[in-house]
Length: 87
Image (spheres, rainbow, N blue to C red):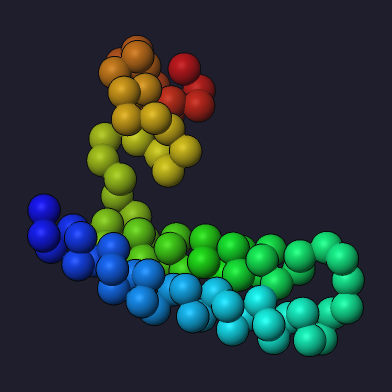
């Protein structure tokens, strides 16, 4: 429980200033009403999180699981159909 809290705090400690810096850098280069800084920060964060998940799991999310499937969808798939999207 405490280790989870420390991981969240560490993520915020690194992520919040990085997000702010990306937003300011993009806003100074792109003068628009649309929040391109937020879009850029979110896209980069998603890409980085994907790399971390790939590295941590080796691409194996478990039997019958994909990154877009809810946790219990594998149980609803009939045998021989490993992908929940094809059920």
